[in-house]
Structures are given as structure tokens and as C-alpha cells.
Image (cartoon, rainbow, N blue to C red):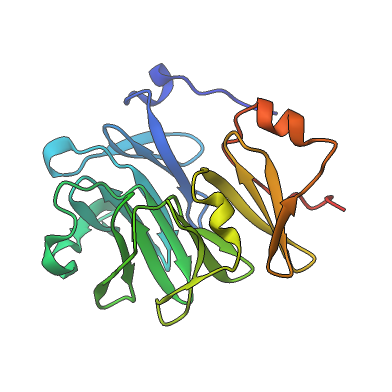
Length: 231
């Protein structure tokens, strides 16, 4: 069954930005008032210094990583309570000043964290800035590789050495917003928010389903997900 929990149930802000789950089944939410958690019975709210909104949350290697305005770090348990450990001091050149971390994703054994103009990578010891030619949308993990749309340019692959590789002929997306990237039969399928769905095959971009393109263009697509029964 689907259970709907209201703001009165969890007693925090009505805006929840992101969600993750740890190995014990506890669910964590990036909430405007802080880090919200639910163990299936009780709700709990832990707050950052300054009561900052938690925009992103990601469970990785037994830690709960969160991103906020001018802040990035992880939550660890001490005496059965969550305590935040900031990693902001590792960020070079104060790159997070006036920035919010909206997305955290793992790939190549590292964590990638991003605002809409700053892309960083954390290898467990250091945080490095990845230079990009312009602002970008959320990075997407596809078959163990990382792809990102750079606005005004097209689609790039973030390689293991954290350099960017442009995908040929994807400049068609330079004036569109790519909302999802998945893989099927070795090809990429890309959704846009209002320009339809496309397939990238043999270095060429084409409409994915001609008979459905008008419909896809008439609605707003916010996310693309591959289901197990997709043929």
C-alpha cells in the first residue's frame, strides 16, 4: 500500500528536496529545515548550523552526505545521535560561496557534487574543482559512466580522470533542457523538459518514437526512468 505522510506527521517544512536510504532501511530527506529521517515508526529532524536547507542527500559508504548553501559534509552517528561533519574546508578557492549543492552522485568510486555552475569531485580525501565551459544541468549516471548537459554546448561525458569529453552531434541539445539520460541496447535515450525524447545512436541524435513525439512535446518531462519490464 501507499502511505501518504503529511507535514503534521513529520513536523518539518513541507518542502523535501531529495531522498536516500541507508543499509538499515532508514530513509533520509533533504528538507528546508534540515535533515529529516524516518525509521518506519518515528520521524526525526537534525539541523545544520544556521538552520540551512538541505538541498541534497546521498547515502554512501556508511555515511549520509548532504549539500546545502555554502556547505557540504556528512552525518555520522555518535551516541546514537547524528552529528554533522563539514568538509567545506577541503573545497578549493572557496568555490561554494554563494552556491548550493543540489546534486550528489557517485561514480568511479568518487562522489560528484554540483550546484548549477560549480562541479566538484570528492575522492574520500580531497575535493577537486572540475572546470566546465558553462553552466550545466544535473549529472546522470548511466551504465557506470557519468554524463552531463552543459548549457549552450551539448552533452559531455565526465571521464574517470575527471576531464570532459563532448559527445559528437549533441549540440542539438544546446538550447534545450535535458531532464534524463538512460541506456538501452548500448544507446542513450535522452528526455527534454518540453522538446520531446531522443535517441543517441552511432554518434547521431534522432527522435526516439516518432508516433509519440508530439505528445512528449506537449507535456513537461521532469525525469526519465528505465523500468525492468521495458522491451
